Length: 618
Ligand SMILES: [Zn+2]
Picture 1: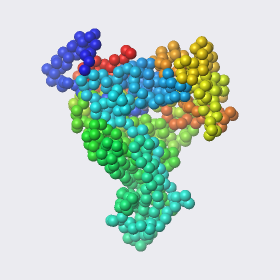
Picture 2: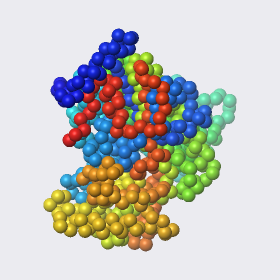
Picture 3: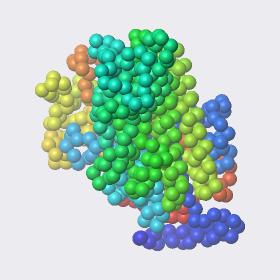
Picture 4: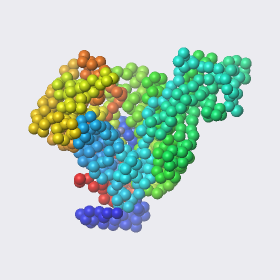
């Protein structure tokens, strides 16, 4: 363990003294803390819900009445998940962390290279590293940035996020493509059908992160001995013919098994499914099956306890249920299950108790608002009926999240409780093909691939990387980027030309497309003057997001497509996109302030843990 910098020693000594005093007066030392991030929870949104009776008294309401809180956590720009968490984790803006988007172009790589902002290490120290350096033990439960992929991004007790494909499979039949056949094998032991059993198969995917693809065999049965053909249940058959699961209309079923994976023995894999519809005469049958997934947790005994107490990784709520079935009930059930999984994981970690700082994460609000934020009649999916349904869904997921908050608040008896979030959400009306705009303005060179699709040419003078409502224009500098083509002496003039054109760019209604076009120098005001943010930072105005690629219709196509999601974030400063902040702990006086900065969170936690904050001077 390295010793703290000498300049801080008197400060730390003072803190220790204060700590001892607290101890003498019955305070609990050493202090422990949990920091929970409610991804996508907007501060002003939460404020309204605190007033309108959405919540119980035990969750956010308790956090507000019993501690220090702010109406808004002022988040960094762009308000994207990886960027915001990196800033909260280190107490430094993106200009220092180097994590500037969820996907971005690393400054020294070739023009078209992109890296994942969740997997890149911060260029400055993080709170989990600072804590470890000072002898504190950290537990991280899917905290963005703690991926367990490298020593710097690891915690001794951890569960990493599973980057699963969110879409499961829907079987709708019977149709020519999805027929129901007679079941020719015998039904599993203990299963009886009073009408001839029918069968169908469904190809269910793995999740791209450990789960396997399988073909599932179902039997449709009639469990009532009433002399009528009225089917009322489905059974899932194992490959050996035994019964794997059964469910009636409206019921969920789970399929799970343990298998070895590499060095890991008896890993629990599983998937959830639901019978969405089953008409007794079999004229209609709809079955949903989610992707198979597993939990990744460390050390091994933590994974085993998690599997025993919380089950397998249930996966996020599936947007496919909203898109094709508008089934908000099933979506809510999935969101609830996912949320309860994270709370169970926290329970297991809490019982272990072998940590001083726990970093927790709850993504369900973000996942819900991305697909269900219908507030603006100009949104392509908007109808008053759909908007009402969507808003009820969002409220219900807030309530689920509030129940989780109530559980986390119970930790208050053992230590400090911090609640944060990384951004709010904005309703989206359209998306801009920024690369196509740059091409039409004559700055970007595209090429046609063998499959007929266009992409940016490797020797294009510029490209743009995108994230939410922000794009970074990258100049393909010769001598800096491998394969770069723009000589150093021509860069400034090119950047000025592009900036000028984009600042004047308007849509068909004559409205400016960008609310901000900032050079590297100007990006300093946004905390974004980092080479990874390219040469120009563009922030889209209003409900427009940026998208990569080119419109499939080609030359005559509109520069704007549908928004990729009804709700999005990742814009410049905007109170409505700010997050939440709550802090309760021994001796913390109840107080509500207007705002607290995301970059001040790490220092506040460090002070309470009596450690030096993360080192952010590179
Ligand atoms: Zn987020």
